View 1 (cartoon, rainbow, N blue to C red):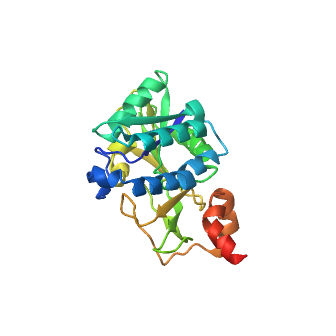
View 2: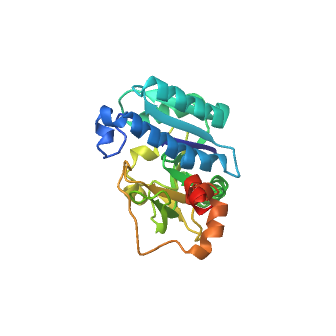
View 3: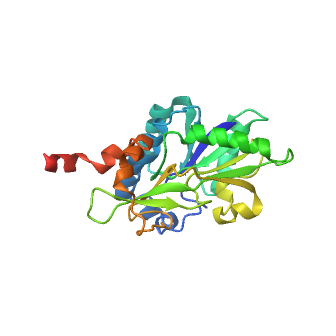
Amino acid sequence: MIPIVQMRYSYFGQSGWRSEASKQKEILFDPKRLAHRFNLLQTYAVRSLLDQEDQDFHFAMLTSQDLPAAHLKQVTEYIRDSFGDRGAVLARGDGPVFRHLIRHNRASFPEGSTMMQIVLDDDDALSVDFMARLKAEAAGFRDRLPEDTRRFFLSFSKGVSVVYEKGQAVPQLYRRDVPYTNLGLALVSPIDDRANPYAVAHKKVARRFASLVYNDLQPYYLRVVHGANDSRAQIDETQPFPEDNLPKLLKRFPLLEGVLNPPKARARAS
């Protein structure tokens, strides 16, 4: 099974986003917005992938061919420096996200391969053991399914919401448990299959596909809420993350060390 982490990054096309930015290029490609997205990408998504205990995966970022040239160069070089030949930046024109990604997968991996397509946004993150746990659970679930099952989903339901309030540099943390959300979601299928996570409404996954919801009470993803999200954020403010569990959380997401204690906050404290 070949894990392929797939990301939409400032893509102007049929992306599934509902934000105003996704509909207007002048907003999507605004320099301040791009700088903000790139900072989120570095702080959360890519950092969490570099922290994976199992580094045997590939990364495919889909962005717009109309992305300003300087920013496209910056992002492309960053992904190359981070992942080498395991990373790809796809600058494409209009069209459904899934179609571009399916073409890339078929052109990049051997015929007869089995894919594990993993959804990750630039402002979200995965736990250090996500890749290893996904592989183990996918293999075990595959053995329990009928032989003629062509594809199936795995949903890691438990995560943490990282919520930035306006004017605050340090976010608040809340517990999150949402089965079949795009976070912690993976589709296992043959390389020649037309199925792709971006072509399936995640709320309908259980109706149409064999699936496993995995929950061992450990958080496997971070959902970052920052006021400029491209999709609606669900936050349960009645479920703050317990401070007593913070040391364990930091082991699962080392990137949170810098997020919860940024340089300016350290300077004020000293």
